[in-house]
Length: 313
Ligand code: NAP
Ligand code: 8YV
Image (cartoon, rainbow, N blue to C red):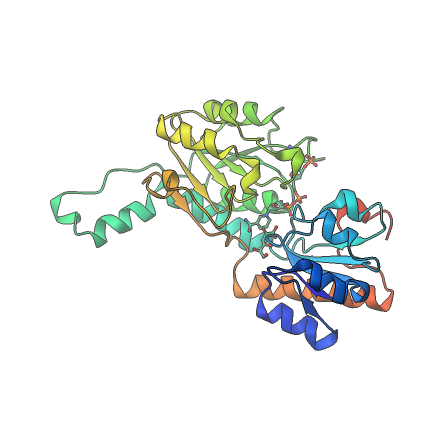
């Protein structure tokens, strides 16, 4: 099996305990493929380990890509699926951790938790009080992407006393939450907007200048989805122009690189793509990744194939 870095040592060791593994090298791919391509039947990867067409095409016996993450925009499905290569991911087990991170970012930006912490550490408190902030209770929050994680975010927001609205391409059957017809319409109706849609070409730049302007000068943007979903240049311009109030970001356009135009700002809270990064959740994701591999090796049904495959497996 081919391990595409970065992978946690725990997952790499667990796969290696059951199967013969090789690790995708940083350089000299031609030599590596000449030696191993004919033997590789499975790939194990995460969202930050790309599985492009040229890699899939180079592996004649490839049968499965097991992705350690619910988002699988790192895998070239247009190449994998027509060839019959199966793809699995890790839905549900990370909903709580990722939803917590969304709330942590929203609370941190609205209550200026990080700026207030700096204020104390830098000895500024004796010179006067920290400015007043805005609370989440009583505010209206929009969820762009009311799926598994979006639903978990909504439950938590309501517990905090916020009103929730959402936009998906289709309304969620039976949902009592108000639906907005477009991302811009949703942004116009809310104080804060939380982005939880999948990445990939269909959502690239979905949150653009129009959506940010609809959110408005008191609005806060939280992105826990993918950096590609938000037009990062438009976001920076909106922050610089005071056209939105602030942002909480777990994901970025060019991870792990974050521009100084963001890192130097006080009105943003920035996390290094850690939304699912708890001990319990990562262990559950590793277990599910491994169980999908075991099922495939035994010829059993996959536990969590990607939706594009569910009718076929
Ligand atoms: P999910 O259950 O499939 O939910 C995604 C939701 O987005 C669905 O309700 C879907 O509804 C909506 N959606 C998809 N495309 C859309 C579009 N173009 N416009 C509007 N809405 C759209 O997925 P999930 O498990 O909640 O995960 C969501 C995403 O979060 C993942 O794909 C991943 O990229 C990201 N994520 C990030 C982290 C992190 O570490 N930061 C961790 C986990 C997940 P419709 O199909 O009706 O449009
Ligand atoms: C990462 C994520 O997978 O699940 C996703 O889509 O983005 C995260 O949970 C995690 O960083 C491990 O790769």
